[in-house]
Length: 178
Image (cartoon, rainbow, N blue to C red):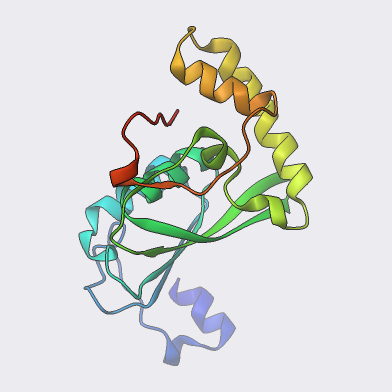
């Protein structure tokens, strides 16, 4: 990292720290955190280890390499609002660039929201949707009959569209496939 900063001519304006995940940072040291290029599960583990990320005013910019739906579900259940969800194509593959802010109000997202998030209003939405639905088809074929399979297959068949996640107190009787 030092050599890269020296080559870029910015070493005098950068503070380099070594540590795992968010451990080198203290609460309040950052207004924006960018976690990219890891699985959604790894991103979730990093965020869980730094409880201070559940602070109003902190923006998370997340680009999971895999399992986008799991990360959306986790964010909603932990009280984060997904304020942006942009589909981006790189090296022949679609990714979701998510911006989330902590609200302290947990919500329960439906299966369609988990799979597609808020990507539908952006250029590239159809490409992203196609990629995610192809993955979903494989998942559905491997699931046993039941509510989870029914919810995911409804998304695959176009019977379920992304809707705003419900506030946690209004989720009695609702089901989230993730």
